[in-house]
Amino acid sequence: MTVRTRFAPSPTGYLHLGGARTALYSWAYARHCGGTFILRIEDTDLERSTPEAVQAILDGMQWLGLQHDEGPFYQMQRMPRYREVVAQMLKEGTAYHCYSSPEEVEAMRERARAQGLHPRYDGTWRPEPGKTLPPVPADRQPVVRFKNPAEGEVSWDDLVKGRITISNAELDDLVIARPDGTPTYNFCVAVDDWDMQITHVIRGDDHVNNTPRQINILRAIGATVPQYGHLSMILGPDGQKLSKRHGAVSVMMYPELGYLPEAMLNYLARLGWSHGDDEVFSMQQMADWFDLTHITASAAQFNMEKLAWLNNHYIRAADNARLAQMVKPQMEQAGAQFAHAPALEDVLALMKERCNTTVELGEAAMLFYREPQPPADLLAQHLSEAARAALQDFLAESVTISWDRATISSLIKSLLAKHKMKMPQLAMPLRLLVTGQLQTPTIDAVLELFGRDTVHARIAKAV
Ligand code: GLU
Image 1 (cartoon, rainbow, N blue to C red):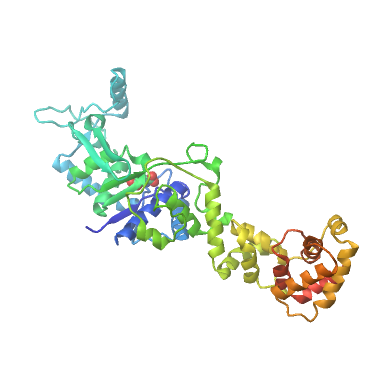
Image 2 (image 1 turned 180 degrees about the vertical axis):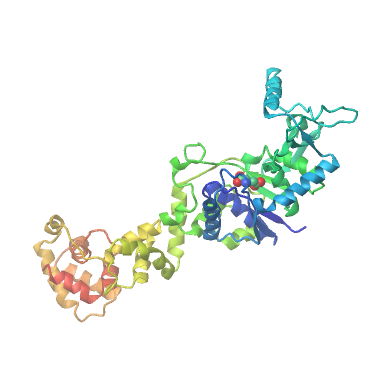
């Protein structure tokens, strides 16, 4: 059997983290098995579906690098096929016309509720052997209902949740086509999973209630029933359903916030699945390792700190040229002057160690690309007489040294000894004069990057 999985989002908003995780698991399982990953856009809800939301899904998938092998298929383009299956089912007697008006159906439900039963359609138009159906009302278009099995139960071994059994008595005769002939949600999903020969349906557990209906329809149309795995919800740190209150829930907010796709993927991979104690792994490893037996059935909790920690890991591992491309527009906007300044890639290599996002990285790197403006009170505090004397020596003695980190460092150390100073007494004024601020990476590395001319000019102005 060739494994075929699908991601089937409804384009009604942005691609949210839960959707992205579903997509990732479906993708990874297909890759793991050498199978096929299909993208299907479930856009039949005309009121809620928008082209922008379709684009947001495609953008999100592309940013994450979750490439589909087939599709995207759009349900709206498959209408003739759904109608064909409805017609076939009517012919075979697995579906029937129902002329009950919406008001009549509501009244049936009310009656059931009053008797303490499941609210449901009472089967008025359901054909049974020997049963006489009511006369067809004039000028009323019928809906088509699925003839759900009246007896027995539907069971499946959920790949995540274990065995789930639902009694058919709980399932209504579902409307599969509306009076104007348009097909309904559960029906389209079943036909698509059949036509696309889906072997494994991995989706959110908000669909568990749909599964018995879809299985019954699949059986009725003679399809092979796929295996199902329903992923538990993602909760916020407070145990409530993940929402905007907890931070960005739209995947495409994350590139703007300075997250790398590999960090997001790694994070989502671990949000409900595990491979021993491994926390950091690549897409390739995910594809190699991903199985359905290590998905957790309990709800996963979103943890922004962990995502930030992973992002820091991937920023440190990232190619500096790539990072430079990412941060440059932001720095230009902030007024960075790139002329006569150190190469951005070298600066990023030095600054990235402590940055959790590329936005932070861009902000940190600004240090090298703007005129320093040391605050007067800090200058007064740090530029002591002793410091001035040591700085003058620094100027004189650093003219001829080789301008590299190690040599600069040993010059600073020898000046500290000569002037009987402690490191901060010289490093702080150096930082202030050269960068305008007190917090920087190690001073020798900073001075090396700025280059001798800039460093000299900035110190000379003050001493
Ligand atoms: N379109 C559904 C959703 O966005 C998913 C359907 C499915 O995976 O079967 O929630």
